[in-house]
Length: 274
Ligand code: AMP
Image (cartoon, rainbow, N blue to C red; front, side, top):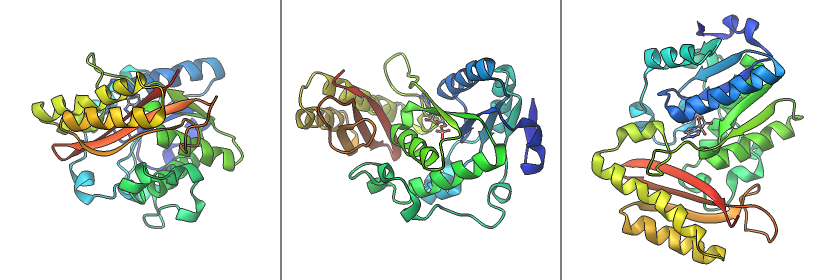
């Protein structure tokens, strides 16, 4: 495996399958890498993992500062998983003209679906779109794998790629969970035992939503479960799975939740009404 720090080392790896990450790799990321290996096996190309903690997608500077970082460990995991290139650039290699965000006007509509990520992390998707399009420019993949854990992000990236002509295949990967249901996240490393216990009520809320048959009741059940469990709720919403606008009869829906426990922000989602 090659560890590449800037654009000049990437030429040999174009046409591969990219897995963009911010590092601190856990079993969720490894599932994405396995999916990338399967795609590379079917259609050719190398597995490229990018590891970059992108400053522009953090609206809270302290969240950026304390985001877990573990390059050596991550490199060992990637090597063992058959990754050909670990692209771990510094900020200057990604943004040679200075740090950029996509202009709000260039964002796909799904990025600003009301009451979801954009409301609580303004500017987040402008940062995500800027960094993902830079990573695509630099690594020139034929396919890229994204986790369903960040459902709105997956919708935004799909829309961004479609708008650009759809040349990169966007492959989703289901959320990997702990045995009790908690979604794996790099931020879980920042949770105290008590906050970890409370954080589980986000998953419980999503489960509670499943037994309700209309969206407002499902949203209330989710919120109640999260509040009782000790989560500061940001949103608990049931939406059209693709547009993230109001649910429409006959179309797939998704339950989405976000909240803060012990100062750590967690998000999760599940299919709803299937
Ligand atoms: P991050 O490093 O948190 O930016 O995540 C990098 C990629 O891994 C994104 O596509 C995430 O959606 C995905 N991911 C993070 N956690 C999980 C998980 N528990 N299961 C599946 N994919 C995940």
